[in-house]
Each structure stands twice: as C-alpha cells, then as structure tokens.
Amino acid sequence: MCNDQIIITNALNTQKHLTSLYNTAAGECCHNPLRSAMMELLRDEHEIQNDIFTGMSSRGWYPVQQASSQAVQQAIAELNSQN
Image (cartoon, rainbow, N blue to C red; front, side, top):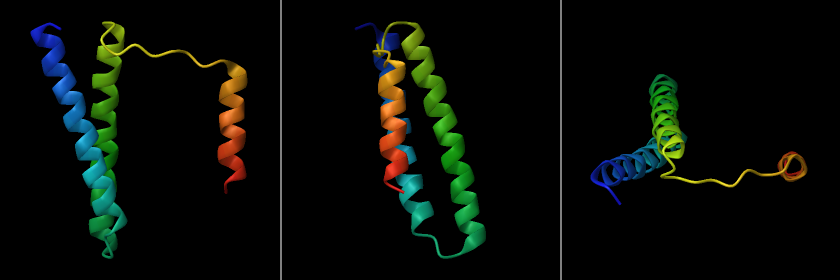
C-alpha cells in the first residue's frame, strides 16, 4: 500500500467517524435551529466522504462489486416494505 493510499484511507475512515458523530448529534437535538445546523453539517460530511470514496474507487483502492438490476430492485422493495 503506497503512502497516498494510506493517507486517503485514513481520511475516509475519519469521514465515516464524523458522519456517525453528526448523525447522533442531529438525532439527539431538541433545539430545531441547532438540529438544522447539525443536519447541514452531516450532509456536508457525507459529500466529503463520497468525494473521497469516489477518488479511491477510481484509483482501484476501494473496489466494489456492481449489483445486478434485479438485486437493486429487490433491496428497494425490501426497504419499502419496512415502512
């Protein structure tokens, strides 16, 4: 693993941790303006996380297996049935 890959992997892990913390904070806010601010920060952190993931994936540092259309539709149906 090269130094760049180690650094970007650490950055992704940090973003995953941050999104978890902001998610918990937003869920436990009882003051609506503060909750809105936390939700905005959470959204921003998710965007950063996605940018890092996309960069890693494009370099082959985070390989993912493509799901079939049928598997995607099945997952959507299962999620929709839980509501």
